[in-house]
Image 1: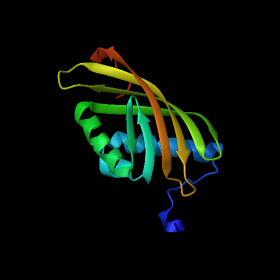
Image 2: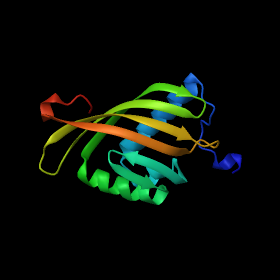
Image 3: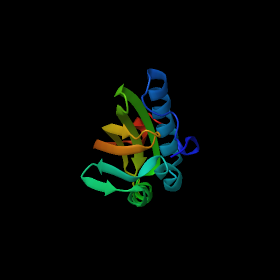
Length: 140
């Protein structure tokens, strides 16, 4: 890949560039646009999301379409937990409701690994859901 195909910032990360990468991911996911979000991942990206194993950018796109069809009014907040070279640990929480109006806050941790051009090649997420009342929402 040439520099035009880089997804900056690229590794190795500093505190500043790691924070930028996490904020960019939060901003992208909050668009709820599978076409846009999937472009941050390598063509052959590997994911584990809860109990689902996802391989490749096209599977990511289809996963995100299903996710945001179910998780309505999704709002996400991410926080950098740690980083080293081309890897990061991220804590997150997001809120959403289903089509019956039941609200949830989902908590989790992600482990990320990036290629030399700044695309995420591995994403492993552990997530738990907490039923909440709409009045208990923190993220808007």
